[in-house]
Image (cartoon, rainbow, N blue to C red):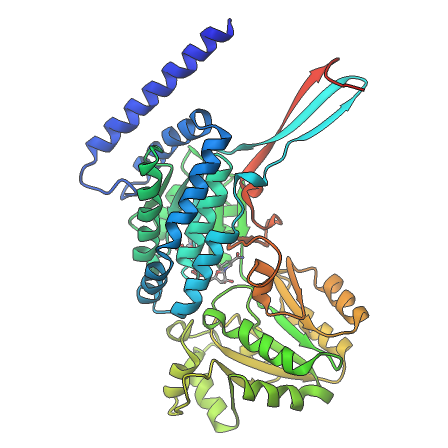
Length: 467
Ligand code: NAD
């Protein structure tokens, strides 16, 4: 077949797809075009929009549109942050603004792709990254808007379409994020359906989306339940699961800076990030000094009977986190046990033993248990136990290179931070791209556009080696 004929056929197919997208949109006047009550409708639109996005938009156009989308979204970081806090009743507006900005400014786009080429006596081989097609993205309540922004940029940069299944307690802010993304994309002529969301957030709908025959990849960000469901779907899946990140402070750490870093990381968005410091393990000989610095920099220590009151509040009877206190301000948690503190208090510090549920559980609230150990080695063994093998995140404050290396190797975590708040490792004050889907369970690590693509090889035999 002549090249001319092939071009004509491709153009005709794309025209037909555009007409079909148009008529589908018209037939569904009862729902906004960025959200769908019905899983089949959402996927049908996504399939069509993805083909047009993949084939009709050049790499340059995709890059221009994604750069424009980033600029456009910057005007809405505050609105989305306020909405996310109202919607979920968790987190801090200022920190959510920072997370939204981070997702916009440091999520890599199409520029991240390179082609791998090898050549030899037999000619040339290219390996390129190609879209999966339609991705089902299940997002958490803890970073709802930043996850939608981060996933959208990564997924469409790779030429994919995405249908989001929002968390039931984060529907409004997730839908608003999708609406804004669509407002910009449609202003650039991008077909409706490339980025959309289910409007009815139920587990049944999320399951239906994940197992839809035209969904080619699942991205599941959340607790163990959703990761298990994604991995049981029989489809390729990116599983970004829970963690319980320990931070060790040894006797060589710069204690004042360490105290500030630990408070900053642990209290960021009220400890909602999965990477945030969740238990502090300190070598005994520096524990008192570290604690003094922490108390001067935003921590409030509870002791004796007050600790028991706190535990009654933030733990259920079976020692699990009480959902009503997840992501709440330290000031509010303290007020509920009758202690009034200034607004500058961001973390509640409690001395604890390893077996304490505050240490063992992923609390997702600004309550930081501190455990004393006699030396680094004892601390490392404890850190390994309390991380529970999630291999998610861990941190150390130290100037002893041997200790830092030993812990980095032993923990085998997806993210390991040395001498900084944990959020530096997702680009907030660290020189790396950001990711709000950190694929711990399935191993892709902090996701980029490459994580949502598949590798394809193309070989030309006997030519195009130039030396
Ligand atoms: P969650 O597990 O309650 O919900 C996450 C999403 O999964 C929601 O959209 C929910 O509706 C859906 N879901 C849950 N069970 C499901 C099932 N069986 N089938 C289909 N869908 C299901 O999590 P959350 O409370 O919103 O978020 C906090 C958890 O997520 C923490 O454990 C945190 O560590 C983890 N998290 C991990 C990452 C990461 O990148 N690794 C990022 C953010 C949050």
